[in-house]
Image (cartoon, rainbow, N blue to C red):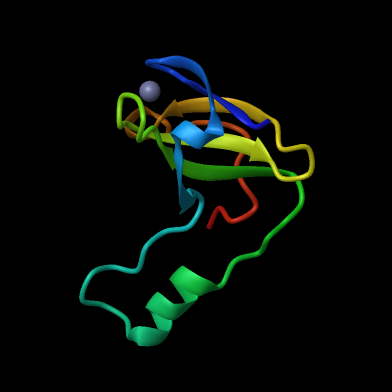
Length: 97
Ligand SMILES: [Zn+2]
């Protein structure tokens, strides 16, 4: 079972978390761009094999947003940080732009 180490609560099963999407993508600026920019942001992704930066929220724990680096081939989470502190978390995911 996929387990995620929350920096505040410790290691927990993934069922306590909610997936929040690709942490390597940048949202379109509010009010700028058209519906195509939002379509591309929400529905187009690379689905690459290997390390991937992802948002996860610990909904059944501290409710903090995390950025986890999960290997999509092995489903092993290599690194986790609070999203507010995670800008330098390595390695960068395939969706990093
Ligand atoms: Zn937590």
